Image 1 (cartoon, rainbow, N blue to C red):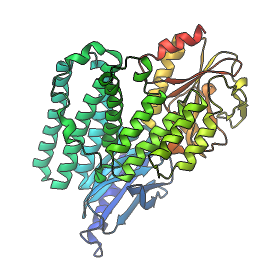
Image 2 (cartoon, one colour):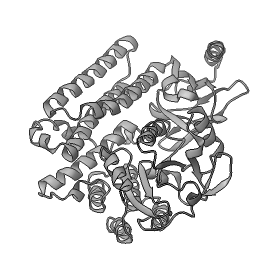
Image 3 (spheres, rainbow, N blue to C red):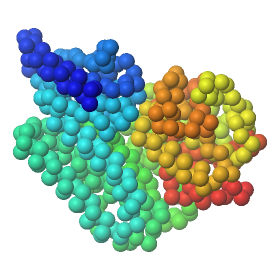
Image 4 (cartoon, rainbow, N blue to C red):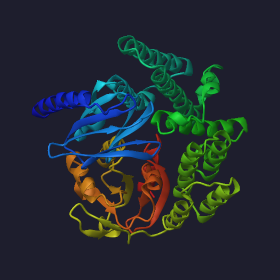
Length: 473
């Protein structure tokens, strides 16, 4: 309460000073606020991966500043390692309050124009709930699932209509908000289709003809949404679903065709992304991601080389060519049959240990980043359950963040993760953006340090089958 009272007082003074600033023009944007339990000393406002301003916290964890001559659109509010989308229009004056212990849940905007960013944040939280929705309902028949997704979409559209009546929203924002609602709706259907094609194939023939009618409306080159998670998720899931439809359309029934981590499946998605997407920045987001995935989940050196050869064939010109080649070198040391017992890592006490000295039991490693709060909480929840089910295996968490020892330790403390199972990589040789492709990857390691398998993912329904196979190996 005390923090909130201070924030309210601060907000009032900020708004008054903002109004009295004669230099302020209608094209300017003011942002200020206060952060409880800050995880860094500043906030950043960015757009299209360009940092527009860095605002430093004072001794009361408050910040404030003005962006000149801004254009209406989607921006990113960053308080490393977290971030959230905000919508800004010229003349807006937004005040932010948040608690880093629950960043997305606590972030709140007030002031002129704040209703837009609050609406997008609420959509984000609802979309996070959709992750549970899809797992609970993907076993429904297609017609039933269609009804549920229609209901979700209509409810969110009604929220937007209500907000517009109250605040008379601009057409630009309404277009973006409608796109956000639509693309999440599309994404739910793509994810459902993927799951039934992979795990409940008896439902495939029951998919209504108009189930994917929206596909004609998808733009793969929307510059205004190139940083928006909803849009990027939809494209990613569309590529996944189409890669499985290819198997059906070509009467390929082999299990490997439906394996998202197989070399051939990943190469299909690379070719599809290259043909569908003309916007260079958006295209390279997916080519970078898929190429890294193809390398990380490769089962032999031939798989790795085939990915690099394909990039050459399609004239890939992204900024991560050197990183991908470095990743390929590293992955060649992480293939099944290789011994990685000598891998050096840091403990939370800053001691250096070798992987082979951590445990005499079989090990399954999983990888996480402090920059993906929702993801690492989800990971650790699943791992906690697996530890209880399979006590004969040590599940070891490995943090992949470069030069973030203190934030890593703070996350472990704040979330009550068990430090005896938590370690951080030393001498990371590739960028964090590529390393994020490891976030769902599991490596199964024998007590001797030899890799048994490296193609497993945490977020798949068959993960426990693979664990049981590992135990009985």
